[in-house]
Length: 168
DNA sequence: GCCAACGTTGGC
DNA sequence: GCCAACGTTGGC
Image (cartoon, rainbow, N blue to C red):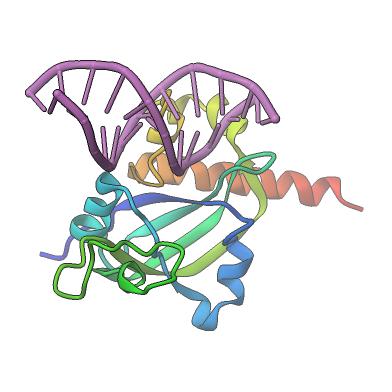
């Protein structure tokens, strides 16, 4: 039995890597490396598989927002930036034999016409249990339910229809 | 730039 | 194993 796709939210500060950077990358694909948190690592290593879907979230910008979606093209594998001296995410405890940190590859699926700002997510009752919206939550890789994922897509479609009507 | 919330580190 | 100190995240 094939496993049903699962859903995730990845945070990125657009100043360091935005969804447009993903669009500009070769094959619109990037390795999601540099995650240095054990809970997020466990998701990357154990649970995130090809064909899973990802909400691409822009943090530390005004407004914080879901900018689009991506699809996982390669599941968990060791994050080699961890043992590259001089890399911003270098971790001296790591080696190829003892990788500690993991990454997955994702490919751009869609950039929303209108990003869905955080406050719009908060106003949506169907999203009230989203990990992102919980007090104190700051996991950079987090699970999303199928219903939450589809609700965000619905908001994106609605926002896009409105913006087209409003323009010229 | 502030600061609340959270994770990690290290002395004991 | 506790917990204070420190570092980081990320919304505001």
